[in-house]
Length: 423
Image 1: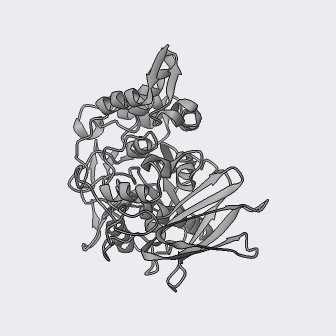
Image 2: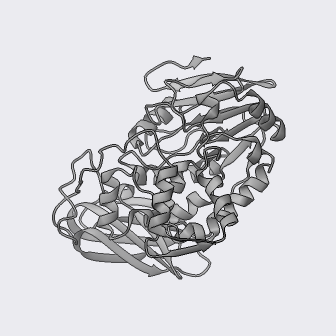
């Protein structure tokens, strides 16, 4: 039997998860202003440090109610209009401040709510469409895509991501999907490091729905940093993101609570690996021990593990976690082990994994594996073009484009400010 208090478990986790790069901004304190509902939590936000709209939005469920929290650039009376499934809008006004909170009961049989929120006196309110049902796990395999885009680690660098998607022609000037039936895959690590994780996640959450309505697809594959955040390993969270959580009076990891928050429930529904046509995509890499499970069984295991109280309570410093040794060992290897799908680096760090790669591709009926996690100077193919490394140091600014040409794919790098490069 393994008995761990969560704080001890996190210390163990931190020892296992030695990342290669320090958090942007280090451990310095960070504020977003004075005044507001909670004086001292904010310093006045600059134009470059927006907190309004989806930059500072938190939405979660509590029983049959929805709790909406948002921030305003200046101290102001807040306004929220919530329109469930096109019904009459519910209107709420909050006291003057910078941090605003409204809880309201959801009408029965409402599967989405349009939120319009901001300051009462400001005409520039924000609209966010929130899906209220439990997210369905997406398919782990799909047919060939004529145009398949893959983007590596984005790490909260929202503006760099927008520049990359504009370069690829996937979004318009209003930040809406214009990719039609094209498919885009985020290969994990949307969270941590950068200053605008919250805004980036809401953007991808909305873009996914827009692409589906257009006949295309936006896929998200989990990375190690998504699981770290949900488990309250917040060493790599940007201080600005921590300040947003403090403004909402929440621990940072509870912004992405996998049982109650909209973004957390959405993230935890995502797979750890997918196959589109003959192309596999995973964050770190896939080894034979996980490939032999098959795509569906691996996803079933991921879904089961993340639904457990062990996973949910791991970040709670007051919780006592009791599991038998075999249970703990299996989850330790699955989420944190060096050969975990979320942490594996061997396909980039070495050139000796040929046998493992061949076994993985054969078992999972693929010809190519695309991965993130381990940074390379530019998107590159390895192992006789059977592995493509898509994580570049300029987070979000370079995309891989695979264009179907008969039974094969032509490969292109799409980098902000440069012409497409075939490689």
